[in-house]
Image (cartoon, rainbow, N blue to C red; front, side):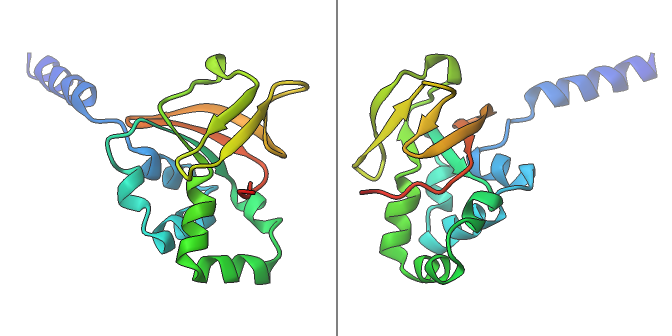
Length: 150
């Protein structure tokens, strides 16, 4: 009886545990350290921990490594430009991979991303390499390059 009660309590606790937000989900994945650093430098952590929902096209550490070091260092020091670049990777709403359609998508930054679905999904020039990483306030789609607003 006691073991059953403990098991039921543990199961109930697991059911009531809240899923992680977008920031915590990205940090837990381990391949978004540069993105997490950039979000912190831009002051966007609290925003992406907010209610949402958000769809984030998240560049991996390898994607950030494609940006020349001097350019990345300068970007991390320019809060306004960094904020513009990071919010260009975010779309309002929760768009799952099955719902993605080719065309223009307005970003939180205000510009539009171009989504293409020929030979895989692309966001501007970046390839979407993993989809539908669900967080409690949205979804993350992993991209292989950092996209820059026009």
